[in-house]
Image (tube, rainbow, N blue to C red; front, side):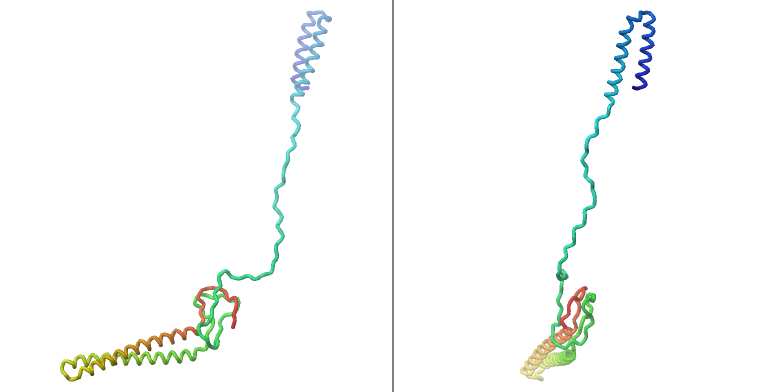
Length: 207
């Protein structure tokens, strides 16, 4: 029982004691027994009300790191997403090879060269023809200009001026043809050099 219960019981008994002094003992006995019966019931009632409720069962789950799934092993080949196949645009004997499989290259880097002896000779011949054609065209143009000045004086015939103009037209056509041949020879000589168009890694070689 609590201290408050005993304190209340003490005050009650003290009060009953005072009443007992004025009343006879027989008349007081039922009242005293009734008081003693009430207080234990009151204490029991308080004790029953303060009893804690039973604990409720709680379902829980432990959170943790999941186990790693087993690795899946397969055989195969790995290829680059973007691949560029390079080759010479003309035939010939490979003279040098500057890179090997696995090497990293940069854009514009020289990879290999062909024997360019024939290409150089062709370029030299085309250049000579081009220079000769330019000289012939210049002479033909000067001849036409001179005859045009002499024609009004009667020093030359009309046929001579026409022939000079025809020679100039032939010389000009030869100049254009020799210039085209010279440009083609120069471009063909460049085909003997294999250049990387972009940065990358050499993955295969067939020569």
